[in-house]
Each structure stands twice: as structure tokens, then as C-alpha cells.
Length: 67
Image (tube, rainbow, N blue to C red; front, side):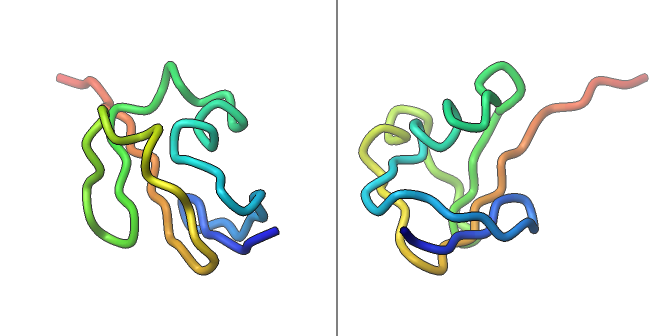
């Protein structure tokens, strides 16, 4: 297991977990509009290739409508 931070909350993940797998595990696919990993935006088509490492900080961002 590795230690990561997701939206400011400490969590554990299996070593080798991709961003796509993390989103699925959190059941957040419908809400996630963008992902930042250690302060850098990750392209959506790379979610399945980018693997999380111990100490990573992940921000799952959602667009909020308003007016």
C-alpha cells in the first residue's frame, strides 16, 4: 500500500493504482472534470497510464455551475 492525499484527505491505495482506477474506486467518475497530480493537470486520455506513487497529492476537480 502507498499513502496518497486526495482533495486534502489522507488515503491509502494499492501500489500501481492508476488515476482512472482511483476515480472508479471513489465512484467519482460522473463528478470529475479534471485531475491535478502534485499540482500538474493530467490529460484525460492519460488517466489510465499515470500510476500513483507514495506521497502523491491528487486533486479531483469538478465544475460547478452558477449564475
